[in-house]
Every structure is written in C-alpha cells, then in structure tokens.
Length: 325
Image (cartoon, rainbow, N blue to C red; front, side):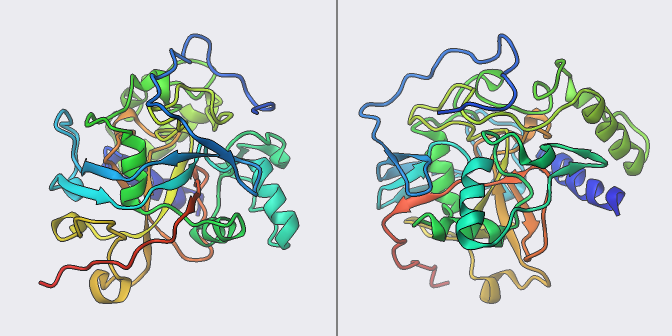
C-alpha cells in the first residue's frame, strides 16, 4: 500500500516535471534577499489568525512562461486572463497552529500525521508554524469556509504567484522555495537520485534518500516573498485550489475569471480530480514553476504527505462565463 502511494506521488513528480515561532530553522545561506515589494502592500489579519495580503485585479499571461522549456501539454497554450475582482490571499500556507484552532472550533479533528513511509514528518503536530499537510480537498474547503473565505481558483493562484512577472519563477529558486534539494539536513541534487531501474526501485531509492537526509516541510515564511508579499507560493506545501482538473482546459477557458471545468459536463472522469499548484518540499526543481499543474483524486479520504493549502477572502466569485462552442 505504501509503495503504491509513493508510486503515485513520484509519477506525478516525474510526469509533470512536476509571527513565526516554532519549527526548523531555514538552511543557512538560503534565505536570500527580500523581493522588491510592489507598493502599497496591504495586509490584514483574518479571523483564523493568519495574515492576508490584498491582491489587486488585473490581467496576466496564464500558462507556459516564455522562458520555460519544461512546460507540459496541460500548461498550454499560454493565454491572457483577466482577474476582474481583487481578493485577500493568505500570505502563507495555512499552518498547523491555525488548523488546530479550526479543528477545536468545529470538532472536525486533526488529520493523521503526514508520513513518508514509516517516518512522521511532524510527530504529534508539534511544529505549529509548519504548513498543515495531509489534508483532503474537503478539509481545505471546510477550513476556508470557517475562515470566512474559500480556496483560490487556479487562475487566481497563478496570478498571485506571478505577482506581475512573466518568468517561470518569481525569483531564484533556492532563495524563494523549499524543495527536494534544500529541505533536508544536507543539500542534494535530487534530479540525480532517480537513475534508471524500474519504477518501483526508483521510488524506493528516492524515498530512502529523502528519509536519510531528513527532508521535510519547513516553517512558513522563511524564504523570500514574491513582489506582492506572498511566501512559499513555490515549494514547501503543494497547494489545493478550487478547480477541477481538465488536461486541455486552457484550450477553452474563459478570458475573465476562469473557475475551471464543470465536473459533470466537461471532465467526464470516473473519479473527481482537483488541481494542485506550487510544488512541495519533496519535489524535483522542475515541478516548482508558476504554470506547473498537478492534480490528485480529491475524494473525502485522499490525503498526501506533501499537500496543504492557503485561503482567499473577499468578494465571492463572479458568475462563470463559459465558452459557447
């Protein structure tokens, strides 16, 4: 069972080329300079106790970046999208501490501790300032409602992550993100770990190396933010968004406020799949790109050790303008 779980994760990773008090300190020398913030930076504290940053409306190029030669087919074509309404976005991923408040207030309970094979990544959920991991899409949506908001759409997420840039990343990767190369006790070249053999042996080799190097999630907000003051938009936790996943959605998505395909009318999938964005501490560098699209079957029981989320507050989504052909 564990092998099949790891198989699914690594297949995604390869196929897609995919304040703060407690927790681990960042790797020395990797915090990097702060990004130049686009003024004015407006921040508020939500009812869940987390900071939220105002994201203004605007237009951007969504999908494969001009400088990106690692794009997959589902990131194409690049296309212009307008976000017509501003919103408040979580400055960080939802933390364990914040999720504990939600669990206590609602009686929903904490998810099981995230496990990499037989190693707990946050024993007893003691690291309160790390991102909550191992939540289902339903958990993430329920938390967002409790906080007075919702999950971001895929378009909102990419718009906020890019923060006015058109590059594949909003900064130098080691300065802005936790990923497989730098989320452990020693620096790795994660792309060189997977070297031939069958898929099962590759999975085991990769997982053993992550365990031996003590790779895992890190305290939120310790890397440099993007130009709009958002932390960890790439790396640390892979983030649930609101949209259903459809491989060729970019071929027909609306030009204004796209909200993903309709599950019943468009995806025609035997199981429901929601989009994941941003890559995680476990991923190869190629997965940490602004346009990279992951997905997971998103039923009420699907949990993965590298998946978290962040919320948006503010205006409800406008009515979806769907293509007529």
